[in-house]
Length: 105
Image (cartoon, rainbow, N blue to C red):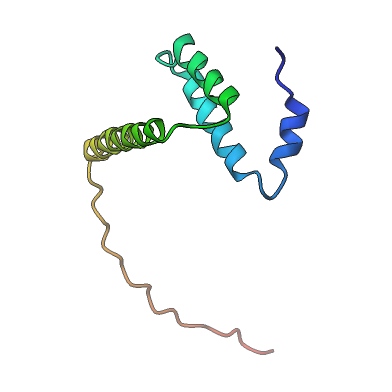
């Protein structure tokens, strides 16, 4: 099955395509992750074909997403902590300049 690249590019230009863009970006990230394998892809296909998301599934996904966000934030914070602190330099005032005029001939 080929990806309708031109159709998607055109659809993403529409002002109301925010959700499409968000889903495409999330799917792109997921497909790069080796843990997002065929079983998860099959479940996603079935979910799209059903055209509805059961409330229990939406609630469980929300809870899992919050845990994922916390894990990402924790990783981000630990990366920031690993960066050495940069000392701020003392700002030296600008010297007073005297404008010297040339001699008129």
